[in-house]
Amino acid sequence: MSSSPHISFVLHNVARLLRTRFEQRLRASALSRPQSQVLAWLPYLAPLVRRLLEIMRGNGRRTRDEAFAGPSPETRQHRLQTPNFIKSNLLAARTQPAGDREKVHG
Image (cartoon, rainbow, N blue to C red; front, side, top):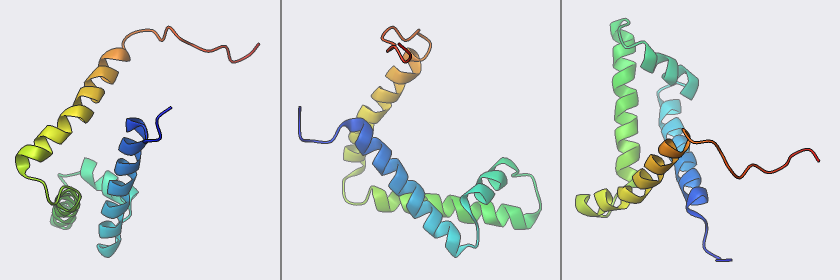
């Protein structure tokens, strides 16, 4: 067994770190993540909500910029190919029955 982490662990950890950093930025705007999710679904509301949505989008952009700082745009695009490939495989696989089900009870 390899001592390097599995890609699923790394992807999960990166997603958690992105959410955490985004939530840090939201707290500075006095918003929680659930509040931001509700606001994202209601973009047609009053100007105040539109302003909050602009803040949230800016926070997301800055968080992604921090996460991808350093490599060239070409390198970043190349690095996204593997997770996108994994995503495509998993989306296609979910339409198929799972053939390797383990016995849970007896």
